[in-house]
Image (cartoon, rainbow, N blue to C red; front, side):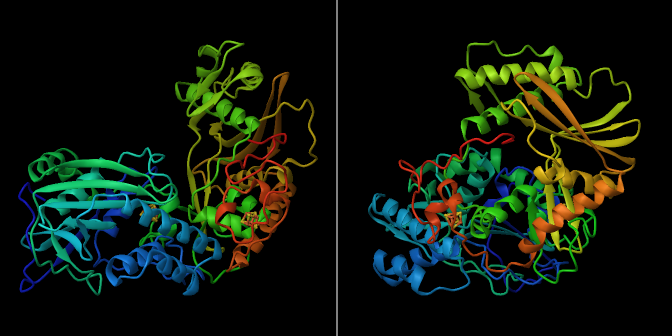
Length: 552
Ligand code: SF4
Ligand code: SF4
């Protein structure tokens, strides 16, 4: 795309290729796959996936948008539109309905507080540019408003959680949204999606405002405001070359997006490992799962589902859990600096709080953490280990169990090769003085996943070595070893995973299972089956489960 302003499509011209980039493609999402974005930007490229849909619609903002449409374009009251979310049902999990009602109310209340004299715009704003054989299109999904005289346009991103909590770099997304508001024409969704937009009506405006609205808290966060000339400058800095990079993306970064990607059936990014979860053939939808997700499912299927569609969660970390996260983060930072980083990095001083990554600890917990870090040096895998190579600290691993139709995500604390064999290490921190488990594979299913991944050779060339459990206590450190070449250990690991994964894989509706766990459930505020606090003083803002040993 050149620096020329984008133009309107002439429907008389043949369209050889169509490149369509939405503002959401410009959000810097962790582990976003450039190749996936580039394929998504080509509506005419055929999807290479053939999987059935989920029972529930996972697009949780759909009912919110429908309700706001009803108010803004059909003239119904806010209360009526919100009541329709529940009465019209549809393919929606009851917890998503609870969230959608809240989100629609938050949005409509925030809108009431907004500037008077702005009218809603139903059509998208679309910028098109023609080259000899390609139609380029930019658009932004969200809510649109303009002043009655048409000289001001406002675009609103909708955020599922709190507006201010989202710290991601949004500059390219803002640039695209501002650009289409400043220079685009109104256009309806093309039907089919593989056809170009047919923009018409007034082109552009004089001033543009871009905001995001947090649907959990109703807070409106200003993102950009300026003239059309300001938009040009902003787009030149944050949008133009980035749009080109999105369209040309080739790198393959497997991860959370694989299950929804057009290319998943043919892409070799996720490592294919049929039978990893030990399940029979599934004909169900392709799903993403992690060991944490399976543990959430064990607690309550509804909780697992509502987490998986990213509904806002209450804070869920106890002090012990925060300590474990801080210890992990400190060691991760140290090992990323080099194999002897944990020995060369000064320990935080006793008697004062300390932080690592985004985690902070204070008081007695901070001192306990310092003592744990000091114990790590004794069991650090890099201590006097000349044969260690291919060290990866907290790698994001993506494995495709084609039998179970599951994209399995894992993030071990450390993997490395020792004398050519792969070792998988997990770290646990506890203040309990002694072990209380009999079989680590059953106590910590992520160890079972490590065993089967090593056994399947999914980490690449090199033999299966061992899985290590490093236990750090303020008073000492311990290493538990599991041989990934031991048939009995591999069989047990498969059994552990199968027992966890089979009910999850077979489930379609993810019904609520109220229990004592509800008092610590971080998505209980959306759940119609939430029985209320069992413990005096518990409410929706306090979901931190009391610490058990080995929280991390
Ligand atoms: S399947 Fe995964 S790795 Fe491959 S292109 Fe899609 S998102 Fe990227
Ligand atoms: S409140 Fe209870 S029943 Fe509802 S999702 Fe949470 S754990 Fe499940």
